[in-house]
Length: 219
Image (tube, rainbow, N blue to C red; front, side, top):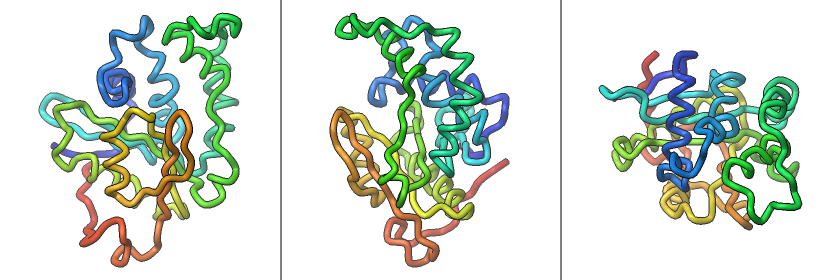
């Protein structure tokens, strides 16, 4: 098993893994008619527009997980608004809000394409970066997620980020426990949770990585 930088040929793997983990970490394949919808929102833009902060884990069966991030969240959102969402909005019509209560999963995703998440200014003031991580079951519970996070946070810190935040759905208790174990703190709650972590300059004194040593990365 190796962790390496994202390559352009990994794009379809981002889509596949995003769908296979799209139900609070479980397989969402049966929930969507269009298998690319989740990847359009949560995975592909990072490989296309912020590849320097995209890392994948690969074993003998192929790519089985990723950690994706954006250094400047607001700039990333603006970049997608200019270069990513317009073509997708032409492809996926906005669903009729009068029937919101009976929208399918595909229609909910299409709505997000037309009304993408906008991070709050007060969150970005201290936690300007953000990340996503997903692993297929065969690579879970082996320390792989921790290694991916280590590499992602180191890359963000090296590029000058003061802090990183992420979103977790309310039902994803495994993810919540994982992030709290790494030192992320709760910033906001509602339908889901926003968690944040300050990125410290001195690695040796970082409280979220006791005994830190530089992770191995290939590629």
